[in-house]
Image (cartoon, rainbow, N blue to C red; front, side, top):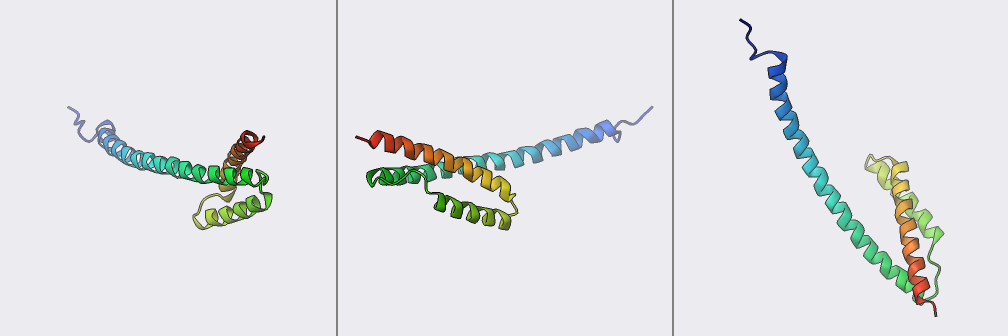
Length: 113
């Protein structure tokens, strides 16, 4: 008669439960972080909408290449210190900047006489 209590399949069952619990714990943290990121982006876009209205009111261009370049440099430095790929951080910021400029153009066009 073979004792299956210490067989690999029995051990896998024990480790599967532990692995599943650890995955669930990590995924819960990821979900919380994702929620925080979404809320932070929403706040950021509320501010950039105000900037867009201010620019439109004062007939300023929607884009500010000098500021964008400073922000990219700043974000790359922050990414490096946080051990995040600076190229990824730059791509993310470029995506956000493009969306902000699109919003600013929409605001400027809706404010035009």
